[in-house]
Amino acid sequence: MAFDLAQVPDELRARGLRVTAPRLAVFQAVAQTPGHPDVETIADRARAQLGSLSTQAVYDTLRALTAAGVLRRVEPAGSPARFEARVGDNHHHVVCRACGRAEDVDCTVGQAPCLTPSDANGFAVDEAEVTFWGVCPECQAVARS
Ligand SMILES: [Zn+2]
Ligand SMILES: [Zn+2]
Image (cartoon, rainbow, N blue to C red; front, side):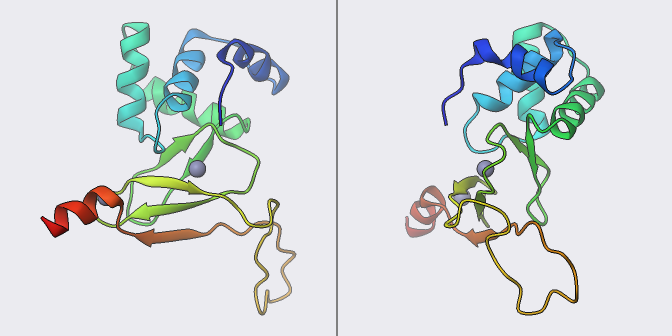
């Protein structure tokens, strides 16, 4: 999905967030880094743009942007939290067991919940998040050589 970064300030305001340089830098770092970057990668990129930014500020900013629905937090089991700017479309992820790389998998239905449990125990289900696990092309090539 392509982003028009010029629209990001309006997007933040529309979701009730003040527009600050760290928020813009963190959002941009997530939106322009393919493969669902982790906090460390986001911090490096945001710092490259801003000059300095504490790790705590990066965490706080990610929390605010995620809570406002501007970013999505993805947390595959056993992997550090990752972030992405593709929100609101109920897509899923495929994660490499070897290197941890995560890519998007489009939701076949396009809206939540796209899977129906055989027995939801009386719960009103509104979301299903699927993680597919496997080995990415690069790691397959390494294993072959
Ligand atoms: Zn891999
Ligand atoms: Zn994704």
